Structures are given as structure tokens and as C-alpha cells.
Image (tube, rainbow, N blue to C red; front, side, top):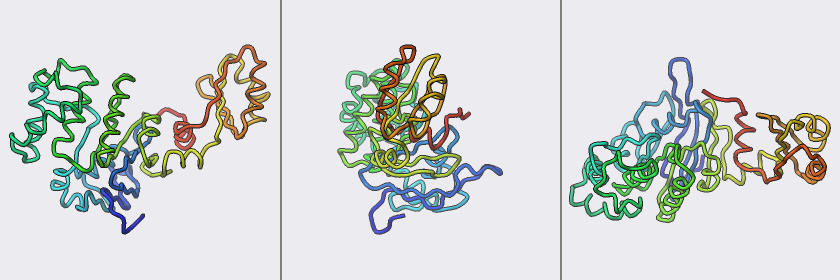
Length: 308
């Protein structure tokens, strides 16, 4: 791990056990000021547990955590007053209006009502909820609730924001709007620690990321670096009843690697031209030729089997 450079989060040798199960198995992470750092992994990989450890909500069984130069869990309460948190599930107060949710949350940080009210107009504008300040939470759409939860996390003007799957369950329009808001925060110099299941989200937003599986960090770096390091540059996806036959007769011999999943053949190649030229004569098959992406890396490193 680097030393000498300022960091907003430093995790070293972090471990957490539940009984005999090691959920977090000795991981190291650093977040630099002003960057978006992504933590990716299948269900049960240990992502949310890692976030809870960093926030001091649960105690580690080993390792060290430093949030904004404060040791956690020893000074976790002090550290939490200086960070923002967007949880996986919205936990907005259903009995309050949009504005009241921001006001009440500000009190948790010891902010006076006058100070919070001074910040509310800018936060409502950031969330695109100016016209809904007096609306009850149950009248908001899922996207509105998510934007309000994001705005609420900024009530104390934090330098570091923890976001646990902030766009899960949102439609594409709402996801793109959240992404635009997160870019705004990065332009303002905020630091974001993001967990997500969306590979395109991580590829668009994250300066660096780590892929976590079974409690361990198995890859770490910038998105394009990980793609270049772990996967062939070209991908050909082949669909149709004869895809398996085509893979056996041609695909395997003309690609570095071929995989079949759900009736689709994925061929990974450094030069995809022979595959594409051959497929043009296969009338019963459909295909997609594309560049490799972060999802290809993720599936190669963690596998295609379902995780419960």
C-alpha cells in the first residue's frame, strides 16, 4: 500500500468472521481524495460488510481502518459525523415531507435548524426536487426517493461519501440522472466509495476499483487497466440453435477462449475477423461483435454461476 500520499480511507489487513466463515479475509484498500473508488463482487462477496466495518457499525476481527485520518472503530462516531452514507435501501422518514427529512437528518450531525434550512434549497436543487419540498415520501417515485437519499447524505457537507448500490431498482432514466449527480460531486472534489452490481456504472464512474470474491480482493486497478490485463480485446457473442455446433466446429479453433452460457456462445479473441467472416455465412445464427468490457473481466474472475 502507498504511503506519504493523503488518503481519505485506508484499510489494511481487514478481517471479519461470523462463526467459522471469514466474510472479509485480510483486504487492503486506499481511497485518494477526489476519486470514485468502486468495490465490485457477486452476492455474498463481502462488499456491504466491508462498508459497515469502515463506518464502525460492526467491529473487525483483525486489521486496521482509518477514515479521514481517524482510527475506526475507536473514533467511529467522530468519523461518521464527517462522512455521508447512501444505504442500499432507502430509509427515509415516511411521516415527514421531503424538506422535513433533510431537516431531521441534519440534527443527527448537531447542525442547528437555521444552518440546515440554509442548505436545503441547494440540496433540493441538486436532487431535482425543488417542487416537491412539501411532498410526503410515499408520493415520490423510486427515482425521487433515491435522489433524496443522495441529497440527504450531503447535509453535513462530507468530503467522503459511502454509497451501497445507489442505483439498484431504478429505471435507465433515473440511473443516468444519478450518474450525472455523482459526476457533479466528483467535480466538486468529493471522494466516493461505491459498491455496485452494474459493471457499466463502475466503468463510467470509477477512477479505480477492486473486484472482491469470497472475502478477498482478487483484482484492483483502473477499469481500462483491468480490461487490458485480464481479458482478450474482442468479443463475439453468438446466438441461435446451432451456436453450440458452430463453437465446436469453428469457434474454439479461432479464438483464445470460448464459453457457453444460457444458450449464448462467447468467443474471446485478439483478432475477431475470422469469426465474423465465418458467421456471415451462417444464416441460422445471429451474432454481436464488440470490444471487451468490465463485465467480461468480472465474469472471468468470479465465474458465471449464480450466487445466493
